Length: 278
Image (cartoon, rainbow, N blue to C red; front, side):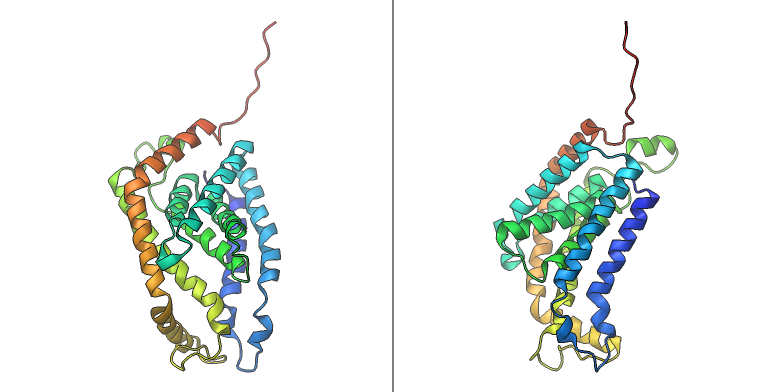
Protein backbone atom coordinates (compact mmCIF):
# COMPACT_ATOMS: atom_id res chain seq x y z
CA UNK A 1 0.00 0.00 0.00
CA UNK A 2 1.61 3.18 -1.16
CA UNK A 3 2.13 6.34 0.86
CA UNK A 4 0.21 9.40 -0.23
CA UNK A 5 0.81 13.00 0.87
CA UNK A 6 -1.77 12.81 3.65
CA UNK A 7 -0.27 9.58 4.97
CA UNK A 8 3.22 11.10 4.96
CA UNK A 9 1.98 14.14 6.86
CA UNK A 10 0.14 12.01 9.44
CA UNK A 11 3.10 9.70 9.97
CA UNK A 12 5.43 12.66 10.24
CA UNK A 13 3.23 14.26 12.89
CA UNK A 14 2.85 11.15 15.04
CA UNK A 15 6.57 10.38 14.74
CA UNK A 16 7.47 13.93 15.76
CA UNK A 17 5.26 13.62 18.84
CA UNK A 18 6.96 10.31 19.65
CA UNK A 19 10.47 11.74 19.31
CA UNK A 20 9.57 14.59 21.65
CA UNK A 21 7.99 12.19 24.15
CA UNK A 22 11.09 9.99 24.24
CA UNK A 23 13.81 12.61 24.03
CA UNK A 24 12.72 15.76 25.81
CA UNK A 25 14.34 14.84 29.20
CA UNK A 26 17.77 14.98 27.52
CA UNK A 27 17.26 18.73 27.06
CA UNK A 28 15.78 19.42 30.48
CA UNK A 29 17.57 21.95 32.64
CA UNK A 30 19.29 21.11 35.90
CA UNK A 31 16.51 22.86 37.85
CA UNK A 32 13.68 21.01 36.12
CA UNK A 33 11.57 18.55 38.08
CA UNK A 34 11.62 15.38 36.01
CA UNK A 35 9.77 13.43 38.67
CA UNK A 36 6.73 15.64 38.07
CA UNK A 37 6.62 14.36 34.48
CA UNK A 38 7.29 10.69 35.20
CA UNK A 39 3.56 9.95 34.92
CA UNK A 40 2.98 11.65 31.58
CA UNK A 41 2.11 8.35 29.87
CA UNK A 42 -1.70 8.81 30.13
CA UNK A 43 -1.42 12.15 28.36
CA UNK A 44 0.75 10.63 25.66
CA UNK A 45 -1.72 7.77 25.24
CA UNK A 46 -4.60 10.24 24.97
CA UNK A 47 -2.70 12.11 22.24
CA UNK A 48 -1.59 8.93 20.47
CA UNK A 49 -5.04 7.46 19.85
CA UNK A 50 -6.39 10.32 17.69
CA UNK A 51 -3.04 10.49 15.88
CA UNK A 52 -3.27 6.79 15.01
CA UNK A 53 -6.83 7.34 13.84
CA UNK A 54 -5.49 10.20 11.73
CA UNK A 55 -2.97 7.87 10.08
CA UNK A 56 -5.76 5.41 9.26
CA UNK A 57 -8.02 8.12 7.87
CA UNK A 58 -5.16 9.60 5.83
CA UNK A 59 -4.29 6.19 4.39
CA UNK A 60 -7.93 5.55 3.51
CA UNK A 61 -8.11 8.96 1.85
CA UNK A 62 -4.92 8.33 -0.17
CA UNK A 63 -5.40 4.76 -1.35
CA UNK A 64 -9.07 4.05 -0.73
CA UNK A 65 -8.79 1.29 1.86
CA UNK A 66 -12.02 -0.42 2.77
CA UNK A 67 -13.45 -2.83 5.30
CA UNK A 68 -11.18 -5.61 4.00
CA UNK A 69 -8.08 -3.67 5.03
CA UNK A 70 -9.52 -2.95 8.48
CA UNK A 71 -10.33 -6.65 8.85
CA UNK A 72 -6.77 -7.60 7.90
CA UNK A 73 -5.46 -5.07 10.41
CA UNK A 74 -7.56 -6.72 13.11
CA UNK A 75 -6.47 -10.25 12.19
CA UNK A 76 -2.76 -9.39 12.11
CA UNK A 77 -2.97 -7.37 15.32
CA UNK A 78 -4.68 -10.30 17.04
CA UNK A 79 -2.00 -12.68 15.73
CA UNK A 80 0.77 -10.41 16.97
CA UNK A 81 -0.89 -10.05 20.35
CA UNK A 82 -1.25 -13.83 20.61
CA UNK A 83 2.41 -14.39 19.77
CA UNK A 84 3.75 -12.05 22.40
CA UNK A 85 2.79 -14.11 25.50
CA UNK A 86 4.60 -17.16 24.07
CA UNK A 87 7.89 -15.71 25.24
CA UNK A 88 6.57 -12.99 27.53
CA UNK A 89 9.90 -11.26 27.01
CA UNK A 90 11.78 -14.04 28.78
CA UNK A 91 15.46 -13.77 27.81
CA UNK A 92 14.40 -11.68 24.84
CA UNK A 93 12.26 -14.40 23.23
CA UNK A 94 9.58 -12.32 21.53
CA UNK A 95 8.31 -14.06 18.37
CA UNK A 96 5.88 -11.27 17.50
CA UNK A 97 8.72 -9.14 16.09
CA UNK A 98 9.21 -11.24 12.97
CA UNK A 99 5.49 -11.09 12.13
CA UNK A 100 5.44 -7.32 12.57
CA UNK A 101 8.48 -6.88 10.32
CA UNK A 102 7.07 -9.11 7.56
CA UNK A 103 3.63 -7.50 7.78
CA UNK A 104 5.10 -4.02 7.53
CA UNK A 105 7.13 -5.14 4.51
CA UNK A 106 4.10 -6.40 2.59
CA UNK A 107 1.47 -3.88 3.67
CA UNK A 108 3.50 -0.69 3.63
CA UNK A 109 4.69 1.90 6.16
CA UNK A 110 1.36 3.57 6.91
CA UNK A 111 -0.54 0.34 7.50
CA UNK A 112 2.52 -1.06 9.28
CA UNK A 113 2.75 1.78 11.77
CA UNK A 114 -0.88 1.41 12.79
CA UNK A 115 -0.52 -2.38 12.94
CA UNK A 116 2.51 -2.21 15.23
CA UNK A 117 0.84 0.23 17.61
CA UNK A 118 -2.48 -1.64 17.72
CA UNK A 119 -0.70 -4.99 18.22
CA UNK A 120 1.19 -3.68 21.25
CA UNK A 121 -2.01 -2.23 22.67
CA UNK A 122 -3.87 -5.52 22.20
CA UNK A 123 -1.02 -7.57 23.65
CA UNK A 124 -0.84 -5.30 26.69
CA UNK A 125 -4.53 -5.93 27.36
CA UNK A 126 -4.03 -9.67 26.82
CA UNK A 127 -1.01 -10.03 29.10
CA UNK A 128 -1.95 -7.47 31.73
CA UNK A 129 0.98 -5.32 30.68
CA UNK A 130 -0.87 -2.02 30.84
CA UNK A 131 1.34 0.60 32.41
CA UNK A 132 3.15 3.89 31.81
CA UNK A 133 5.37 2.14 29.28
CA UNK A 134 2.49 1.05 26.99
CA UNK A 135 2.13 4.18 24.78
CA UNK A 136 5.90 4.22 24.33
CA UNK A 137 5.82 0.56 23.29
CA UNK A 138 3.08 1.36 20.79
CA UNK A 139 5.19 4.12 19.25
CA UNK A 140 8.37 2.03 19.17
CA UNK A 141 6.68 -0.98 17.55
CA UNK A 142 4.94 1.32 15.10
CA UNK A 143 8.34 2.63 14.02
CA UNK A 144 9.64 -0.94 13.63
CA UNK A 145 6.78 -1.85 11.27
CA UNK A 146 6.96 1.45 9.42
CA UNK A 147 10.69 0.98 8.80
CA UNK A 148 10.04 -2.47 7.33
CA UNK A 149 7.59 -0.90 4.90
CA UNK A 150 10.20 1.65 3.83
CA UNK A 151 12.87 -0.93 2.96
CA UNK A 152 13.97 -0.93 -0.70
CA UNK A 153 12.66 -3.39 -3.27
CA UNK A 154 9.03 -3.44 -2.18
CA UNK A 155 7.61 -2.29 -5.50
CA UNK A 156 4.16 -3.57 -6.28
CA UNK A 157 3.18 -4.96 -9.66
CA UNK A 158 1.40 -1.77 -10.62
CA UNK A 159 4.40 0.39 -9.81
CA UNK A 160 6.71 -1.95 -11.68
CA UNK A 161 4.56 -1.56 -14.80
CA UNK A 162 4.90 2.18 -14.54
CA UNK A 163 8.68 1.74 -14.57
CA UNK A 164 9.31 -1.20 -16.92
CA UNK A 165 13.02 -0.43 -17.18
CA UNK A 166 13.52 0.19 -13.46
CA UNK A 167 14.61 -2.19 -10.76
CA UNK A 168 12.00 -4.81 -10.01
CA UNK A 169 10.81 -5.88 -6.58
CA UNK A 170 13.25 -7.71 -4.34
CA UNK A 171 12.17 -11.30 -3.76
CA UNK A 172 13.55 -14.66 -2.67
CA UNK A 173 16.62 -15.13 -0.54
CA UNK A 174 17.92 -11.55 -0.95
CA UNK A 175 14.67 -10.23 0.48
CA UNK A 176 14.80 -12.66 3.40
CA UNK A 177 18.37 -11.62 4.19
CA UNK A 178 17.34 -7.96 4.04
CA UNK A 179 14.40 -8.56 6.36
CA UNK A 180 16.53 -10.65 8.70
CA UNK A 181 19.16 -7.92 8.93
CA UNK A 182 16.52 -5.26 9.47
CA UNK A 183 14.79 -7.43 12.08
CA UNK A 184 18.05 -7.84 14.01
CA UNK A 185 18.84 -4.13 13.98
CA UNK A 186 15.30 -3.03 14.79
CA UNK A 187 15.02 -5.55 17.63
CA UNK A 188 18.07 -4.05 19.32
CA UNK A 189 17.00 -0.47 18.60
CA UNK A 190 13.56 -1.19 20.04
CA UNK A 191 15.17 -2.11 23.34
CA UNK A 192 17.41 0.96 23.25
CA UNK A 193 14.49 3.31 22.57
CA UNK A 194 12.39 1.72 25.31
CA UNK A 195 15.29 2.17 27.75
CA UNK A 196 15.22 5.88 26.99
CA UNK A 197 11.61 5.98 28.11
CA UNK A 198 12.39 5.11 31.75
CA UNK A 199 16.09 5.77 32.26
CA UNK A 200 15.88 9.51 33.11
CA UNK A 201 13.45 8.79 35.94
CA UNK A 202 15.40 6.00 37.65
CA UNK A 203 17.14 7.14 40.81
CA UNK A 204 19.91 5.50 42.78
CA UNK A 205 21.98 4.36 39.79
CA UNK A 206 25.75 4.39 39.70
CA UNK A 207 27.26 7.68 38.62
CA UNK A 208 28.57 6.24 35.36
CA UNK A 209 25.13 5.20 34.08
CA UNK A 210 22.72 7.66 35.70
CA UNK A 211 20.99 10.55 34.02
CA UNK A 212 22.18 13.99 35.12
CA UNK A 213 19.69 16.79 34.33
CA UNK A 214 21.33 19.79 32.75
CA UNK A 215 24.48 17.96 31.62
CA UNK A 216 25.45 18.17 27.92
CA UNK A 217 23.43 15.82 25.72
CA UNK A 218 26.59 14.02 24.57
CA UNK A 219 27.61 13.15 28.14
CA UNK A 220 24.15 11.91 29.04
CA UNK A 221 24.04 9.80 25.88
CA UNK A 222 27.36 8.25 26.85
CA UNK A 223 25.93 7.29 30.23
CA UNK A 224 22.81 6.01 28.50
CA UNK A 225 24.87 3.74 26.26
CA UNK A 226 26.65 2.34 29.31
CA UNK A 227 23.25 1.79 30.94
CA UNK A 228 22.00 -0.15 27.89
CA UNK A 229 25.11 -2.32 27.76
CA UNK A 230 24.83 -3.09 31.46
CA UNK A 231 21.12 -3.81 31.64
CA UNK A 232 19.15 -4.66 28.48
CA UNK A 233 21.66 -5.97 25.95
CA UNK A 234 21.18 -9.50 27.31
CA UNK A 235 17.51 -9.28 26.24
CA UNK A 236 17.95 -7.30 23.04
CA UNK A 237 20.45 -9.67 21.41
CA UNK A 238 18.35 -12.84 21.93
CA UNK A 239 15.35 -10.95 20.58
CA UNK A 240 17.38 -10.12 17.48
CA UNK A 241 18.49 -13.75 17.07
CA UNK A 242 14.93 -15.08 17.42
CA UNK A 243 13.68 -12.52 14.88
CA UNK A 244 16.37 -13.47 12.36
CA UNK A 245 15.81 -17.22 12.75
CA UNK A 246 12.04 -16.96 12.39
CA UNK A 247 12.32 -14.56 9.44
CA UNK A 248 14.62 -16.92 7.55
CA UNK A 249 12.70 -20.10 8.34
CA UNK A 250 9.06 -19.01 8.34
CA UNK A 251 9.50 -15.89 6.22
CA UNK A 252 8.83 -17.46 2.80
CA UNK A 253 5.52 -18.97 3.86
CA UNK A 254 4.36 -15.89 5.78
CA UNK A 255 5.31 -13.48 2.99
CA UNK A 256 3.56 -15.66 0.42
CA UNK A 257 0.39 -15.82 2.53
CA UNK A 258 0.36 -12.07 3.18
CA UNK A 259 0.91 -11.22 -0.48
CA UNK A 260 -1.75 -13.67 -1.63
CA UNK A 261 -4.23 -12.17 0.84
CA UNK A 262 -3.33 -8.67 -0.30
CA UNK A 263 -3.81 -9.56 -3.98
CA UNK A 264 -7.16 -11.20 -3.34
CA UNK A 265 -8.33 -8.28 -1.22
CA UNK A 266 -7.38 -5.90 -4.08
CA UNK A 267 -7.15 -2.95 -1.70
CA UNK A 268 -6.32 -0.33 -4.32
CA UNK A 269 -8.58 -1.61 -7.09
CA UNK A 270 -11.13 1.09 -7.94
CA UNK A 271 -14.77 0.20 -7.60
CA UNK A 272 -16.71 0.48 -10.85
CA UNK A 273 -20.41 0.07 -11.51
CA UNK A 274 -21.76 -1.29 -14.77
CA UNK A 275 -25.32 -0.79 -15.95
CA UNK A 276 -27.47 -3.85 -15.63
CA UNK A 277 -28.65 -5.64 -18.73
CA UNK A 278 -32.34 -5.41 -19.45
